[in-house]
Structures are given as C-alpha cells and as structure tokens.
Amino acid sequence: MKKQLRVGLIGCGFMGRVHSNAYRKLGNFFDFNHEIVMQAVCSNKEAEVVSFAEKWGWKSYETDWQKLVARNDIDLIDVCVPNNLHYDIVMAALGSGKIVACEKPLAMDVEQAREMTDAARKTGLPSLVWFNYRGVPAVALAKILVDEGKIGRPFHYRAKYLQDWTISADVPQGGDTLWRLDSKAAGSGVTGDLLAHSIDLAMWLNGPISSVCAMTETFIKERKVQDEPGKVMPVTIDDACAFLARFENGTLATFESTRYARGRKNQHTLEINGEKGAVAFDLENFHELGFYNHGDDGRFRGWRNIQVWDSDHPYMKHWWVPGCGIGYEHTHIHTLANFVREIETGERMVPDFNDALRTQIVCEKVLDSAKNQQWESIELGA
Ligand code: SOE
Image (cartoon, rainbow, N blue to C red):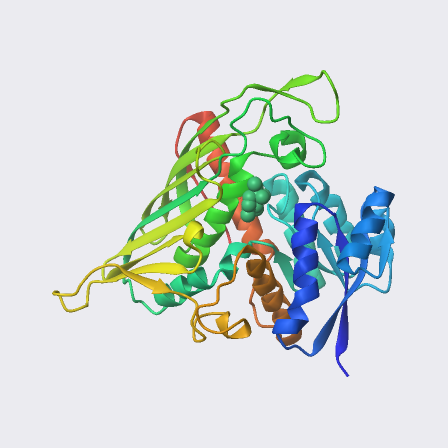
C-alpha cells in the first residue's frame, strides 16, 4: 500500500494549470512510495474553482485559502498566486505543519523571504520554490559536466532571458492575468520574474554571486488598468534589466532580460566558458546542449551539439523512446519528482526556500544597483 501525499493547490491561473498537470502525470512516469492525491484546490472565485477542480481532477475545493491551509486532510500546500500573496499563505501553511511548495520569486522582498526561510527551516520539513528550469534535461546535463570538471576553471558566465509580450502600449496592467506588470502585486518586473530564473541557474551551476552593477528601464510609462475601465496608472516595474556580475569563484558575468525583445518569446540562455571547455544552452532549442572540449584532437575540435534525448540523459528514461522529445510541462514534472524523492529520502534535491532567499537577495541588489547607479556587493550568508 502506498502512502498518500495529499496536495492542496492555491491558485487557478497559468501556474495552477501547469502544476495540476504535473500532479496528474507524475505517478504515470515516476515510481514512488507515495501516491499523489489531488485533494483540494482553492480560488476566491467559486465558479472558476468549481470548473477548474472538475477539469483537472481535484477532489474538492475551497474559496478561502485560510480554510484550505487549516484542513487536516492535506499534507502539502502549493502556492500559485501573485507574489504579494505568498508571504501570508506560506507563513500560515508552515504554521499549520504543512510541507510547502511556492512559485517563484519566493517573496516581495528579502525581508519577507528571510522570515519565510527561517519559518520553513524551523519546521524541519523540505520546501520547494518552483525554479523549474533546473529540470530541463540539457541544463541538468550541463550541471553534471560542470561538476565533473569537464570545462575546468570558469572564466565567463553569460545569461539572457528575453520575451516580447509587453511591447504594445495597449497591454493593460493588473488584474488576474496581468498582475506581473503591477509592482504592487509582483514586487518587480523582469528582475523578479525572469532574471530570478537566470540567477537561480547561475548560482546552481557556478556558485554564489558576490557583486552586481545594473541598469533598468521602463519603456512604457503608463498603462491602462485591467478591470478598471478608463483608469490609467504609471508603470512602476522594470521592463528590462541588464547587469554585470562577479561570482565568488572569480567568474565575470553578464545577465540581460527584457519583455521588449521583438521576436523572442521565451529565450532563456546560458553559456559558461572555462579553461578546458564550455557549455551553452538556449531554451528555444530545448533538447540541445552545446559542449566544447579543448582536450579533443585538434583536427576535430569544435562545438558539439549534444541531442539531450537519449535514455542515459537526465530524466529521459522516464519518457518515450530516444529522440521523442519533451517540453516545458515536463520541467515541472521533473521538479515535482525531485521534491517527492526529497520528501521520501531526505536527500536535498530541489531549489528550496534558502536557495530562493539567496536569489531574492541578488535580485534586490540588482535593483538597488540600478537605482543607486553603482556596484553593490552581496553577502549571501550560509
Ligand atoms: C512570464 O511571462 C513567465 O510566465 C514567467 O512568470 C515564468 O516564470 C517563465 O518561466 C515564463 O514566463
């Protein structure tokens, strides 16, 4: 008999759908001692949550997150709501002894993130922040190559995260779907939403960032307010952000992110150039990892394009036959698989609250640097 892991999900938006999909499929592709039970979903819009529960197979629903968090038939609370709601829900869920998973970025600011991390630590339970791109097989292979020393001493780290969906001045801000453009709900713009992913991967692959020097821009200064006809408000998020960084290990880095890169829908790239070799990844070519090995016979030396979809590549044996691809949704399924494995074994597997706090610290320093127009040094602590 498998043990049950009873999940309560809060939020029925884009991420609510992505996570519901992961909970549904996990057990079909990965084996655990636990059975995932989609116990309850919560949103304050009753009609919406009823149809969401029916469509995705949630067994029950709530319209008040406090009731969901207090239920004693739930083991794990998953938070998929706008960033300004994370703190209250996470603190209450931890207070009622639940395991907590939370969407990124963890919090609105470092102060909140620190409190949440301390509270999570005190429970002694594993925690997860959904930095899902660690679950891309090609990125996981890059991690293996770097950890095995295949690229040697790193000199340069280069990251971009580019989108183009806010270029039109007619896109409103706020409401259920466009809260990412409203700083009161999101905390920041591309820095917390997109660069947080790049920073999480960078520190996972290459260790702590020790200083940053940034610039930001808000290209469209005012936008209509979603759900409030006729109202126009200043835009106070960063539409674009670029920064230089130094890592503790001596690597020099550049990071760039925007939602104004016409033609780029979700281009998330990284490249690390080391003494012995280099790795390069671009999310728009999901299954490929660039690898350059200076140790190769000089006549054949060159970038190789590893097709990361063979059964001996990370995660791939769980899916189809070699060469039959997977995509975005699977990065969440892999993240969840690692989290359930961590819950079962106690082995550290996923980005946790402490990792997310460190990313939040870097994001805050990036925004401070842009505001103060100076380099900021960073103390990440343990
Ligand atoms: C923003 O457009 C967004 O949905 C982010 O919020 C996600 O974290 C990213 O993975 C895709 O883009």
